[in-house]
Length: 274
Length: 274
Image (cartoon, rainbow over all chains, first blue to last red; front, side):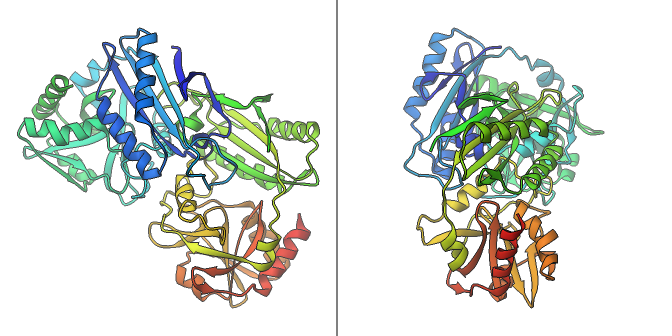
């Protein structure tokens, strides 16, 4: 599937070897689903990107990002697609020190994407508990930075297609998220999602559930520390991200769960809400 | 200063936008000092790179790396230089999942480098204690992977040229290393260096000091957990890496230290030993 990429506004399939994103993971990314030619949850994605750039002190011009997205969507008439944005701290001399005035590199790419997740959404998914842990670093928690080796190692723990996602603990054994998704439990009619101030990525669907959908469905939503035992005891579990929507979790290893009513109601609200 | 880079054996100044080193920090690097046309500590660097590739399960062909280095040194007659190697897990489809059969991308670059560290080596350096912490992740500890945002953030904490290095604690407040260097204390005629099994990069000069120089100088060397108070109490402190050699630390913030005798003896042994 060809990828069309604008690198700093010009079509290119490559980036300079001195890019700090490559050298040090010194940057951020977003992955945005395009449905019927329209980027979903665009404002939430751009808001998170902006927050990440503020945190890392990387310059960002959202007007240019919007122009790139518009141009790609206009020039390639792809109805179902993924837009990926990478913002790095640009090129630099060797060494960790960066020139704060130097600017950034901006990659915006478009790729057709026909993935169908209806099986996962309706029947639910089997997950595993990963051995790879998430390290605790509040300075990097929540943002979608480029340093993702933990997620890569966790995802490499299984090859079978029977398992759709892996759940990850932090180094103090709190349950935090999936390798590519956020996690919610349902317990006594309450939504519970792990706190992400130590590690993890604060996804846009998680944000939408916390701020909008739980309110619309009159569900109390709690952001707190969660253990794997909390998950085993929960009535329902689901994982979510902006590409896959909401997937009911029907198993963590050999611990089985039903596809729950509240999960299904949230799925419906999410589909109606975008 | 021009950089000459071989990307998978061909001269290029760019790497594909789908490279997993850029996308996820999914790779490793080495930085090697070239003196009088000869790469210093080459075997130790290649050994560490190999260990890192084994840990991350990234294919590595050291014969090709050696060929690239040889070619760059032959074709560009640069006496004093830096060789930088980046090995990434190659290109891939979107997503953390990787194809273990797919190979890797290999970047080997040469750049002239005339940096003179004689002031730092003879007079010693002033350091600061960084606010940015190193996260604990034994799966990634020791190897020189591409996910270096913690080092970048720590290095961004100061701009003044008066400070040459920052010291970093881990998230449990153990003293681990410098932003770009390893750390040794001298206390009661013993060498002490922080254990790196939770986080940090195990540098080749650190390894050389532990395995060779301390033996040659008849110094007992202890690898253990270290606190900042241990550093304040130590008789001597120094930091080291393969580009800068050994730098005596004459201050951590306002805590002053002398340039110590054992540090100077190790500097002499290091220079004689390569």
